[in-house]
Image (cartoon, rainbow, N blue to C red; front, side, top):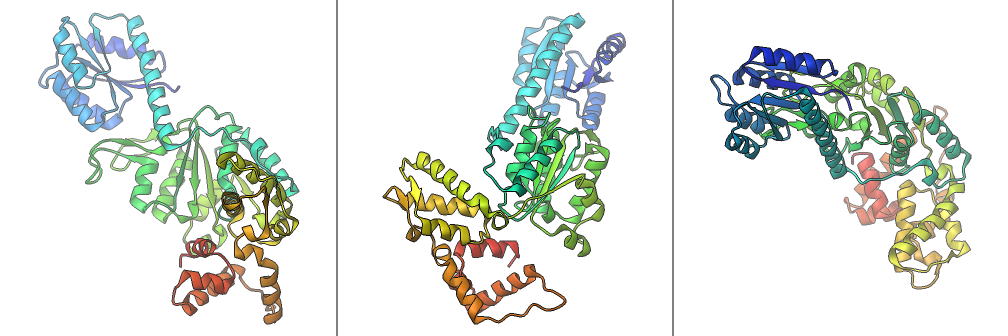
Length: 457
Protein backbone atom coordinates (compact mmCIF):
# COMPACT_ATOMS: atom_id res chain seq x y z
CA UNK A 1 0.00 0.00 0.00
CA UNK A 2 1.25 3.52 -0.79
CA UNK A 3 2.35 5.79 2.12
CA UNK A 4 -0.40 7.57 4.04
CA UNK A 5 -1.20 11.28 4.15
CA UNK A 6 -1.35 12.11 7.86
CA UNK A 7 -2.57 15.29 9.59
CA UNK A 8 -1.35 15.82 13.18
CA UNK A 9 -3.16 18.48 15.27
CA UNK A 10 -1.44 19.34 18.57
CA UNK A 11 -0.58 22.63 20.27
CA UNK A 12 2.84 21.43 21.46
CA UNK A 13 5.54 22.35 18.94
CA UNK A 14 8.08 19.74 20.07
CA UNK A 15 5.56 16.89 19.76
CA UNK A 16 4.53 18.08 16.28
CA UNK A 17 8.18 18.23 15.18
CA UNK A 18 8.96 14.78 16.59
CA UNK A 19 5.83 13.22 15.06
CA UNK A 20 6.54 14.68 11.61
CA UNK A 21 10.20 13.60 11.71
CA UNK A 22 9.44 10.02 12.77
CA UNK A 23 6.59 9.32 10.32
CA UNK A 24 8.18 11.19 7.41
CA UNK A 25 11.16 8.86 7.78
CA UNK A 26 8.72 5.97 7.11
CA UNK A 27 7.71 7.56 3.81
CA UNK A 28 4.42 9.09 4.98
CA UNK A 29 3.38 12.62 4.01
CA UNK A 30 2.80 14.50 7.27
CA UNK A 31 1.00 17.83 7.79
CA UNK A 32 0.92 19.47 11.22
CA UNK A 33 -1.36 22.08 12.77
CA UNK A 34 -1.26 23.93 16.08
CA UNK A 35 -5.00 24.74 16.35
CA UNK A 36 -8.31 23.22 15.37
CA UNK A 37 -8.96 26.02 12.84
CA UNK A 38 -5.58 25.47 11.20
CA UNK A 39 -6.22 21.71 11.22
CA UNK A 40 -9.55 22.13 9.44
CA UNK A 41 -7.93 24.28 6.75
CA UNK A 42 -5.20 21.69 6.16
CA UNK A 43 -7.81 18.93 6.09
CA UNK A 44 -9.83 20.68 3.37
CA UNK A 45 -6.63 21.46 1.46
CA UNK A 46 -4.97 18.03 1.53
CA UNK A 47 -7.71 15.52 2.49
CA UNK A 48 -5.41 13.19 4.47
CA UNK A 49 -6.02 9.49 5.05
CA UNK A 50 -5.80 9.79 8.84
CA UNK A 51 -5.94 12.60 11.41
CA UNK A 52 -4.44 12.63 14.91
CA UNK A 53 -6.30 15.11 17.18
CA UNK A 54 -5.10 16.22 20.62
CA UNK A 55 -7.71 16.52 23.40
CA UNK A 56 -6.61 19.98 24.52
CA UNK A 57 -6.67 22.48 21.67
CA UNK A 58 -6.72 26.28 21.87
CA UNK A 59 -9.75 28.21 20.54
CA UNK A 60 -11.73 25.35 18.98
CA UNK A 61 -12.58 22.35 21.16
CA UNK A 62 -11.23 18.99 19.98
CA UNK A 63 -14.68 17.32 19.87
CA UNK A 64 -15.93 20.18 17.70
CA UNK A 65 -12.99 19.61 15.35
CA UNK A 66 -13.82 15.90 15.08
CA UNK A 67 -17.50 16.66 14.52
CA UNK A 68 -16.80 19.17 11.72
CA UNK A 69 -14.34 16.85 9.99
CA UNK A 70 -16.79 13.94 10.15
CA UNK A 71 -19.56 16.14 8.73
CA UNK A 72 -17.40 16.64 5.63
CA UNK A 73 -16.07 13.09 5.29
CA UNK A 74 -17.60 10.45 7.52
CA UNK A 75 -15.09 7.84 6.26
CA UNK A 76 -12.00 9.73 7.45
CA UNK A 77 -9.99 7.90 10.12
CA UNK A 78 -9.38 9.91 13.30
CA UNK A 79 -7.12 8.98 16.21
CA UNK A 80 -7.88 10.86 19.45
CA UNK A 81 -4.93 11.67 21.76
CA UNK A 82 -5.30 12.42 25.47
CA UNK A 83 -2.65 13.27 28.03
CA UNK A 84 -5.01 13.30 30.94
CA UNK A 85 -6.41 9.79 30.96
CA UNK A 86 -9.90 11.13 30.40
CA UNK A 87 -11.84 8.01 29.46
CA UNK A 88 -15.09 10.02 29.27
CA UNK A 89 -13.59 12.35 26.67
CA UNK A 90 -12.20 9.43 24.70
CA UNK A 91 -15.62 7.73 24.74
CA UNK A 92 -17.24 10.93 23.40
CA UNK A 93 -14.62 11.08 20.66
CA UNK A 94 -15.34 7.45 19.71
CA UNK A 95 -19.07 8.21 19.59
CA UNK A 96 -18.35 11.01 17.12
CA UNK A 97 -16.53 8.51 14.90
CA UNK A 98 -12.92 8.40 16.09
CA UNK A 99 -11.26 5.15 15.03
CA UNK A 100 -8.88 4.84 18.00
CA UNK A 101 -7.56 6.75 20.99
CA UNK A 102 -4.07 6.77 22.51
CA UNK A 103 -2.72 8.09 25.81
CA UNK A 104 0.08 10.66 25.91
CA UNK A 105 2.95 10.36 26.29
CA UNK A 106 3.05 7.68 23.61
CA UNK A 107 5.88 5.75 22.02
CA UNK A 108 6.34 5.63 18.26
CA UNK A 109 6.16 1.88 18.49
CA UNK A 110 2.52 2.37 19.58
CA UNK A 111 2.00 4.86 16.75
CA UNK A 112 3.38 2.40 14.18
CA UNK A 113 0.99 -0.31 15.42
CA UNK A 114 -1.93 2.11 15.05
CA UNK A 115 -0.72 3.08 11.54
CA UNK A 116 -0.62 -0.62 10.53
CA UNK A 117 -4.18 -1.08 11.85
CA UNK A 118 -5.28 1.97 9.88
CA UNK A 119 -3.73 0.58 6.68
CA UNK A 120 -5.67 -2.63 7.19
CA UNK A 121 -8.89 -0.68 7.71
CA UNK A 122 -8.32 1.38 4.56
CA UNK A 123 -7.75 -1.82 2.55
CA UNK A 124 -10.91 -3.40 3.98
CA UNK A 125 -12.98 -0.28 3.25
CA UNK A 126 -11.68 -0.22 -0.31
CA UNK A 127 -12.53 -3.89 -0.82
CA UNK A 128 -16.06 -3.30 0.47
CA UNK A 129 -16.54 -0.41 -1.95
CA UNK A 130 -15.32 -2.53 -4.84
CA UNK A 131 -17.54 -5.49 -3.93
CA UNK A 132 -20.54 -3.20 -3.96
CA UNK A 133 -19.78 -2.30 -7.56
CA UNK A 134 -18.86 -5.65 -9.02
CA UNK A 135 -19.00 -9.38 -8.63
CA UNK A 136 -15.81 -11.18 -7.74
CA UNK A 137 -15.40 -12.55 -11.24
CA UNK A 138 -12.09 -14.32 -11.97
CA UNK A 139 -12.68 -14.68 -15.69
CA UNK A 140 -9.53 -15.38 -17.71
CA UNK A 141 -8.72 -16.07 -21.37
CA UNK A 142 -9.09 -19.81 -20.70
CA UNK A 143 -12.82 -19.18 -20.23
CA UNK A 144 -13.30 -17.66 -23.70
CA UNK A 145 -15.01 -20.19 -25.99
CA UNK A 146 -13.49 -20.08 -29.48
CA UNK A 147 -11.73 -21.97 -32.20
CA UNK A 148 -11.42 -19.23 -34.84
CA UNK A 149 -7.92 -18.07 -35.68
CA UNK A 150 -8.98 -14.43 -35.39
CA UNK A 151 -9.94 -14.75 -31.75
CA UNK A 152 -7.01 -17.02 -30.87
CA UNK A 153 -4.59 -14.45 -32.32
CA UNK A 154 -6.29 -11.67 -30.34
CA UNK A 155 -6.11 -13.75 -27.14
CA UNK A 156 -2.38 -14.35 -27.63
CA UNK A 157 -1.82 -10.62 -28.19
CA UNK A 158 -3.98 -9.71 -25.18
CA UNK A 159 -2.02 -12.07 -22.91
CA UNK A 160 1.21 -10.30 -23.84
CA UNK A 161 -0.37 -6.88 -23.27
CA UNK A 162 -1.81 -7.97 -19.91
CA UNK A 163 1.69 -8.70 -18.56
CA UNK A 164 3.10 -5.30 -19.57
CA UNK A 165 3.05 -2.19 -17.42
CA UNK A 166 1.24 -0.28 -20.15
CA UNK A 167 -1.55 1.68 -18.57
CA UNK A 168 -3.88 2.19 -21.55
CA UNK A 169 -5.68 -0.24 -23.85
CA UNK A 170 -8.41 0.57 -26.39
CA UNK A 171 -10.91 -2.16 -27.30
CA UNK A 172 -12.93 -1.66 -30.49
CA UNK A 173 -15.85 -3.71 -31.76
CA UNK A 174 -19.59 -3.88 -32.10
CA UNK A 175 -21.87 -3.89 -29.07
CA UNK A 176 -22.04 -7.25 -27.26
CA UNK A 177 -18.99 -8.60 -29.14
CA UNK A 178 -17.18 -9.44 -25.89
CA UNK A 179 -15.17 -6.29 -25.10
CA UNK A 180 -16.12 -6.51 -21.40
CA UNK A 181 -14.97 -10.15 -21.27
CA UNK A 182 -11.59 -9.23 -22.76
CA UNK A 183 -11.20 -6.25 -20.40
CA UNK A 184 -11.80 -8.39 -17.33
CA UNK A 185 -9.56 -11.19 -18.66
CA UNK A 186 -6.73 -8.71 -19.28
CA UNK A 187 -7.05 -7.47 -15.70
CA UNK A 188 -7.20 -10.96 -14.20
CA UNK A 189 -4.10 -12.10 -16.09
CA UNK A 190 -2.12 -8.95 -15.27
CA UNK A 191 0.11 -8.08 -12.33
CA UNK A 192 -2.79 -5.97 -11.05
CA UNK A 193 -5.11 -8.96 -10.66
CA UNK A 194 -5.24 -8.75 -6.86
CA UNK A 195 -6.28 -5.11 -7.04
CA UNK A 196 -9.66 -3.60 -7.97
CA UNK A 197 -11.36 -3.97 -11.35
CA UNK A 198 -13.89 -1.16 -11.57
CA UNK A 199 -16.19 -0.74 -14.55
CA UNK A 200 -18.52 2.03 -15.67
CA UNK A 201 -20.72 2.37 -18.75
CA UNK A 202 -20.15 5.91 -19.99
CA UNK A 203 -23.35 5.93 -22.06
CA UNK A 204 -25.64 5.05 -19.15
CA UNK A 205 -25.01 8.17 -17.06
CA UNK A 206 -25.65 11.89 -17.70
CA UNK A 207 -22.61 14.15 -17.99
CA UNK A 208 -22.58 15.52 -14.41
CA UNK A 209 -23.20 12.13 -12.81
CA UNK A 210 -20.50 10.47 -14.95
CA UNK A 211 -17.92 13.04 -13.83
CA UNK A 212 -18.80 12.64 -10.15
CA UNK A 213 -18.53 8.84 -10.48
CA UNK A 214 -15.15 9.02 -12.19
CA UNK A 215 -13.51 11.84 -10.26
CA UNK A 216 -15.52 12.04 -7.03
CA UNK A 217 -16.53 15.30 -5.38
CA UNK A 218 -15.97 17.41 -2.30
CA UNK A 219 -18.65 18.22 0.21
CA UNK A 220 -20.61 21.23 -1.07
CA UNK A 221 -19.37 20.88 -4.66
CA UNK A 222 -23.04 21.01 -5.72
CA UNK A 223 -26.45 21.08 -4.05
CA UNK A 224 -26.71 17.39 -3.19
CA UNK A 225 -23.03 16.92 -2.27
CA UNK A 226 -23.64 16.39 1.44
CA UNK A 227 -20.52 14.26 1.95
CA UNK A 228 -17.15 13.82 0.30
CA UNK A 229 -17.22 11.07 -2.34
CA UNK A 230 -14.18 9.33 -3.79
CA UNK A 231 -14.22 8.67 -7.54
CA UNK A 232 -13.60 5.38 -9.29
CA UNK A 233 -10.01 6.29 -10.15
CA UNK A 234 -9.22 6.62 -6.44
CA UNK A 235 -11.16 3.47 -5.52
CA UNK A 236 -9.34 1.45 -8.20
CA UNK A 237 -5.87 2.46 -6.98
CA UNK A 238 -3.22 0.04 -8.39
CA UNK A 239 -5.97 -1.80 -10.29
CA UNK A 240 -7.94 -1.32 -13.51
CA UNK A 241 -10.69 1.07 -14.58
CA UNK A 242 -12.81 -0.17 -17.51
CA UNK A 243 -14.50 2.70 -19.35
CA UNK A 244 -17.14 1.06 -21.54
CA UNK A 245 -18.68 3.06 -24.41
CA UNK A 246 -16.06 5.79 -24.06
CA UNK A 247 -17.15 7.17 -27.43
CA UNK A 248 -20.26 8.58 -25.74
CA UNK A 249 -18.54 10.99 -23.32
CA UNK A 250 -18.63 14.72 -24.03
CA UNK A 251 -15.67 16.92 -24.87
CA UNK A 252 -15.30 18.49 -21.41
CA UNK A 253 -15.09 15.07 -19.73
CA UNK A 254 -12.66 13.96 -22.45
CA UNK A 255 -10.37 16.86 -21.48
CA UNK A 256 -10.40 15.78 -17.81
CA UNK A 257 -9.76 12.16 -18.76
CA UNK A 258 -6.83 13.22 -20.93
CA UNK A 259 -5.44 15.01 -17.87
CA UNK A 260 -5.65 11.78 -15.85
CA UNK A 261 -3.82 9.85 -18.56
CA UNK A 262 -1.06 12.43 -19.00
CA UNK A 263 -0.49 13.55 -15.40
CA UNK A 264 -1.61 10.49 -13.40
CA UNK A 265 -3.72 12.45 -10.96
CA UNK A 266 -7.38 13.34 -10.46
CA UNK A 267 -9.07 16.34 -8.96
CA UNK A 268 -12.46 15.86 -7.34
CA UNK A 269 -15.34 18.10 -8.43
CA UNK A 270 -15.19 21.25 -6.32
CA UNK A 271 -11.67 20.34 -5.15
CA UNK A 272 -8.32 22.11 -5.35
CA UNK A 273 -6.02 19.19 -4.57
CA UNK A 274 -4.43 16.90 -7.19
CA UNK A 275 -4.67 13.29 -6.00
CA UNK A 276 -2.08 10.88 -7.49
CA UNK A 277 -3.55 7.70 -9.00
CA UNK A 278 -1.96 4.54 -10.36
CA UNK A 279 -4.48 2.66 -12.49
CA UNK A 280 -4.60 0.87 -15.82
CA UNK A 281 -7.32 2.30 -18.05
CA UNK A 282 -9.06 0.00 -20.53
CA UNK A 283 -11.47 1.89 -22.77
CA UNK A 284 -13.98 0.36 -25.17
CA UNK A 285 -16.34 1.65 -27.81
CA UNK A 286 -18.56 0.39 -30.61
CA UNK A 287 -18.25 3.68 -32.44
CA UNK A 288 -16.12 4.50 -35.46
CA UNK A 289 -13.63 6.62 -33.50
CA UNK A 290 -11.93 8.03 -36.60
CA UNK A 291 -15.33 9.23 -37.87
CA UNK A 292 -16.03 10.77 -34.44
CA UNK A 293 -12.68 12.58 -34.62
CA UNK A 294 -13.56 13.89 -38.08
CA UNK A 295 -16.95 15.02 -36.75
CA UNK A 296 -15.19 16.84 -33.86
CA UNK A 297 -17.07 14.78 -31.24
CA UNK A 298 -13.97 12.93 -30.01
CA UNK A 299 -10.57 14.44 -29.28
CA UNK A 300 -7.78 13.18 -31.50
CA UNK A 301 -5.16 13.59 -28.74
CA UNK A 302 -7.27 11.46 -26.35
CA UNK A 303 -7.63 8.76 -29.02
CA UNK A 304 -3.87 8.51 -29.54
CA UNK A 305 -3.29 8.57 -25.79
CA UNK A 306 -5.73 5.66 -25.31
CA UNK A 307 -4.47 3.49 -28.14
CA UNK A 308 -1.09 2.58 -26.72
CA UNK A 309 -2.46 -0.88 -27.48
CA UNK A 310 -5.53 -1.17 -29.70
CA UNK A 311 -7.48 -4.41 -30.05
CA UNK A 312 -10.36 -4.82 -32.49
CA UNK A 313 -12.77 -7.67 -31.77
CA UNK A 314 -14.55 -9.13 -34.81
CA UNK A 315 -18.34 -9.56 -34.73
CA UNK A 316 -19.74 -13.07 -34.46
CA UNK A 317 -20.74 -13.10 -38.15
CA UNK A 318 -17.03 -12.87 -39.04
CA UNK A 319 -16.12 -15.92 -36.96
CA UNK A 320 -18.95 -18.31 -37.70
CA UNK A 321 -16.74 -21.30 -36.87
CA UNK A 322 -17.18 -20.34 -33.19
CA UNK A 323 -20.99 -20.61 -33.33
CA UNK A 324 -21.22 -24.44 -32.85
CA UNK A 325 -18.88 -24.28 -29.84
CA UNK A 326 -20.91 -21.45 -28.33
CA UNK A 327 -24.16 -23.32 -28.94
CA UNK A 328 -22.85 -26.36 -27.05
CA UNK A 329 -21.49 -24.16 -24.28
CA UNK A 330 -24.79 -22.31 -23.76
CA UNK A 331 -26.83 -25.53 -23.91
CA UNK A 332 -24.69 -26.98 -21.12
CA UNK A 333 -24.88 -23.72 -19.15
CA UNK A 334 -28.67 -23.41 -19.29
CA UNK A 335 -29.26 -27.13 -18.77
CA UNK A 336 -27.48 -26.71 -15.46
CA UNK A 337 -29.21 -23.44 -14.64
CA UNK A 338 -32.77 -24.56 -15.41
CA UNK A 339 -32.51 -28.26 -14.62
CA UNK A 340 -33.09 -29.31 -18.25
CA UNK A 341 -31.66 -32.30 -20.16
CA UNK A 342 -31.27 -31.02 -23.72
CA UNK A 343 -28.55 -33.15 -25.32
CA UNK A 344 -28.54 -32.16 -28.97
CA UNK A 345 -29.74 -29.73 -31.64
CA UNK A 346 -31.23 -30.92 -34.93
CA UNK A 347 -29.12 -30.22 -38.06
CA UNK A 348 -31.71 -27.81 -39.58
CA UNK A 349 -31.69 -25.70 -36.41
CA UNK A 350 -27.89 -25.64 -36.25
CA UNK A 351 -27.73 -24.69 -39.93
CA UNK A 352 -30.13 -21.79 -39.36
CA UNK A 353 -28.03 -20.59 -36.44
CA UNK A 354 -24.92 -20.76 -38.63
CA UNK A 355 -26.56 -18.81 -41.47
CA UNK A 356 -27.90 -16.02 -39.25
CA UNK A 357 -25.79 -12.84 -39.13
CA UNK A 358 -26.10 -12.15 -35.37
CA UNK A 359 -26.43 -8.34 -35.21
CA UNK A 360 -26.58 -8.72 -31.41
CA UNK A 361 -23.42 -10.85 -31.44
CA UNK A 362 -22.70 -13.36 -28.63
CA UNK A 363 -25.31 -11.87 -26.30
CA UNK A 364 -28.03 -12.45 -28.90
CA UNK A 365 -26.91 -16.08 -29.41
CA UNK A 366 -26.91 -16.60 -25.66
CA UNK A 367 -30.45 -15.20 -25.37
CA UNK A 368 -31.70 -17.37 -28.22
CA UNK A 369 -30.34 -20.57 -26.65
CA UNK A 370 -31.60 -19.56 -23.20
CA UNK A 371 -35.12 -19.00 -24.57
CA UNK A 372 -35.07 -22.30 -26.48
CA UNK A 373 -33.87 -24.28 -23.44
CA UNK A 374 -36.55 -22.76 -21.21
CA UNK A 375 -39.35 -23.62 -23.67
CA UNK A 376 -38.08 -27.05 -24.78
CA UNK A 377 -39.72 -30.11 -23.17
CA UNK A 378 -37.69 -32.73 -25.08
CA UNK A 379 -33.98 -33.46 -25.12
CA UNK A 380 -33.41 -31.91 -28.56
CA UNK A 381 -33.64 -28.34 -29.86
CA UNK A 382 -35.61 -28.02 -33.11
CA UNK A 383 -35.88 -25.38 -35.81
CA UNK A 384 -39.29 -24.24 -34.58
CA UNK A 385 -37.75 -23.57 -31.15
CA UNK A 386 -35.86 -20.64 -32.69
CA UNK A 387 -37.19 -17.10 -33.27
CA UNK A 388 -38.70 -16.43 -36.70
CA UNK A 389 -35.91 -14.13 -37.88
CA UNK A 390 -33.47 -17.04 -37.43
CA UNK A 391 -35.58 -20.01 -38.55
CA UNK A 392 -36.61 -18.09 -41.72
CA UNK A 393 -33.19 -16.59 -42.41
CA UNK A 394 -32.58 -18.54 -45.65
CA UNK A 395 -36.00 -17.70 -47.06
CA UNK A 396 -35.63 -14.01 -46.15
CA UNK A 397 -32.22 -13.69 -47.75
CA UNK A 398 -33.54 -15.31 -50.98
CA UNK A 399 -36.44 -12.86 -51.18
CA UNK A 400 -34.12 -9.88 -50.74
CA UNK A 401 -31.74 -11.18 -53.40
CA UNK A 402 -34.48 -11.80 -55.98
CA UNK A 403 -36.58 -8.69 -55.37
CA UNK A 404 -33.90 -5.99 -55.26
CA UNK A 405 -31.36 -5.52 -58.00
CA UNK A 406 -29.15 -3.14 -56.04
CA UNK A 407 -26.06 -1.76 -57.76
CA UNK A 408 -23.15 -0.67 -55.58
CA UNK A 409 -22.01 2.87 -56.60
CA UNK A 410 -18.43 3.21 -57.86
CA UNK A 411 -17.65 5.63 -55.04
CA UNK A 412 -18.91 3.09 -52.49
CA UNK A 413 -21.52 3.53 -49.76
CA UNK A 414 -21.57 3.61 -45.97
CA UNK A 415 -23.14 0.37 -44.72
CA UNK A 416 -23.62 2.14 -41.38
CA UNK A 417 -25.67 4.93 -43.01
CA UNK A 418 -27.57 2.54 -45.31
CA UNK A 419 -28.75 0.39 -42.39
CA UNK A 420 -29.70 3.50 -40.43
CA UNK A 421 -31.81 4.83 -43.34
CA UNK A 422 -33.54 1.45 -43.80
CA UNK A 423 -34.53 1.47 -40.13
CA UNK A 424 -35.82 5.05 -40.42
CA UNK A 425 -37.91 4.10 -43.48
CA UNK A 426 -39.34 1.03 -41.73
CA UNK A 427 -40.29 3.08 -38.66
CA UNK A 428 -41.90 5.74 -40.84
CA UNK A 429 -43.82 3.14 -42.85
CA UNK A 430 -45.10 1.49 -39.67
CA UNK A 431 -45.92 4.77 -37.84
CA UNK A 432 -43.17 3.98 -35.32
CA UNK A 433 -44.73 0.64 -34.42
CA UNK A 434 -41.69 -1.45 -33.46
CA UNK A 435 -43.42 -4.80 -34.01
CA UNK A 436 -44.48 -3.85 -37.57
CA UNK A 437 -41.12 -2.22 -38.36
CA UNK A 438 -39.18 -5.27 -37.21
CA UNK A 439 -41.32 -7.50 -39.47
CA UNK A 440 -40.65 -5.21 -42.43
CA UNK A 441 -36.92 -5.59 -41.79
CA UNK A 442 -37.03 -9.32 -41.04
CA UNK A 443 -35.52 -8.92 -37.57
CA UNK A 444 -36.77 -9.33 -34.01
CA UNK A 445 -38.18 -6.41 -32.03
CA UNK A 446 -35.26 -6.73 -29.57
CA UNK A 447 -32.80 -6.44 -32.46
CA UNK A 448 -34.66 -3.38 -33.74
CA UNK A 449 -34.51 -1.76 -30.31
CA UNK A 450 -30.78 -2.46 -30.14
CA UNK A 451 -30.25 -0.84 -33.55
CA UNK A 452 -32.41 2.17 -32.63
CA UNK A 453 -30.18 2.71 -29.61
CA UNK A 454 -27.07 2.18 -31.74
CA UNK A 455 -28.16 4.83 -34.25
CA UNK A 456 -29.85 7.04 -31.60
CA UNK A 457 -33.23 6.85 -33.33
